[in-house]
Length: 431
Image 1 (cartoon, rainbow, N blue to C red):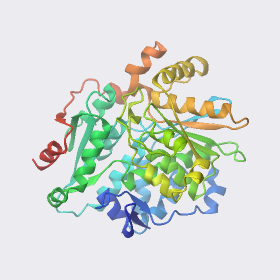
Image 2 (tube, rainbow, N blue to C red):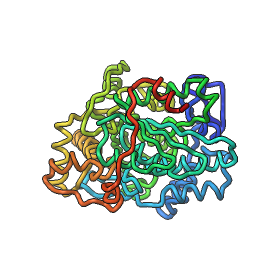
Image 3 (cartoon, one colour):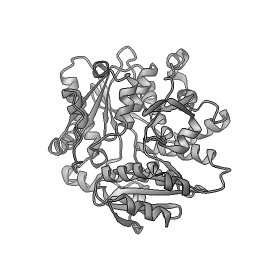
């Protein structure tokens, strides 16, 4: 399998080079040269296969010959070493819980997979690798955990000051060793733009071995397909594929789901559930892609004004928007609606959701109300405790603290505050 830049389709690299580079030299995102078709036996026998075997078969075509089979199987096994339960919420809605990993967020899968791939690829390198990542919340903690103490790799995480939850901030600022957190006085989009500038800076690239751990990196993006296959394995009505609602910010997760659909995974429809940052809902409604400054919301991990991965979604559908709209719809949910959804889920359905999951549930519920007989699931992308300062006042109860969170509360935050200007990031990286 080779990959091309979406800015220059004629130039190809393999999975190893795409992983190490993160972003193409022309600033484009890498995309697979072909989208593999799933073997019939995978879907026919999915109920009897182990999760490890499912994940291995899904990802094997994308890695090509860059990883030996034994190494890839080890990476997959370590990547998904926790549960992905599909939980009943109401008669026609289930929740795919993706928060059972070490940092209690769906991004654990991509971060663990990428860290292990990169560790293997750079094992003989003479100079250290700098992993540069921007986070709106959960990515930072997942990347910090995945790369912690990996030899030959230093991680620099940019996050927007005062725009991540207290638990998220502790997860990415308390590890130390090879993990450094830069607290940017700006928005997530500012952080993401600074990272993109770093990768486009040829003088910086000559002095540092840089790569990205955002969902723009194929090794972060592609393994997110695993969730959807694990959900299909647990889906009991195989004659009636699910409507899938994905809380969406940078659109990497839902892009992976649409890629899995293109490979043959049975689905009825995808819904991208956004918060007040509604660039994609507006685009699908009006045809105009109009960015705007990011708005701070309760579902902060989705506070993204210019979703990087949407260009990949367009590529999956060969830039044919009418075809895309048959498979994908998008809606915007306000903070007021999110609060009401958290409360209703807790009081009426005895289900505790974080703000992102609540956005997904409400968008799905509204879709199913208009489509009689349809059923589906939403992605619960983070444990509610990561947003206890938001959720507890709404449900008027304390959320029990998992052991991994309790251990954070006594740790001291270590971050370096910088203005939202690229020169400050460059100076730090070269210091």
